[in-house]
Amino acid sequence: MLSKCSLRLKLSDFINSDIEEMVMSKINAIHNELNVTVLLYLWFEEEAIVSKDLKEFLMRWEKKLTFKTIVKQGYKLHHSEFIFFDIIPTGTPDNIAKRFSFNYINANNILVGLSEFYNVVNFTTSEKPTKRQKRNDYED
Picture: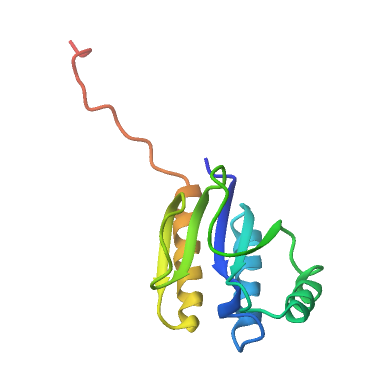
């Protein structure tokens, strides 16, 4: 059963935007509602975010979020890192180890990607019906 999963987002697509509050609140709600530990990876391209904005973002969300968050410059991951669900803009190089991904053109679609993340995590953590054995070679 899935008890923890990693989610990766491009921070520069929603930091200091109209959807920042919704994105971060939705991730927190998924973490709390589904009782799954979320490891959040946030990445940005070099010079896409000013260090002052990054610091303010981290200070703003530090006390509101109850899960581990890793912020990295660049989309590349260490070879031992695995992403369960990757929400990435179309055209981003796709050479990382991941299970599921959601591509978007418009940054507002990050919220749609988070809904898909919720659906996938909900499905993988929900109770499954017991399958009946199909073989009957033990019957008389």
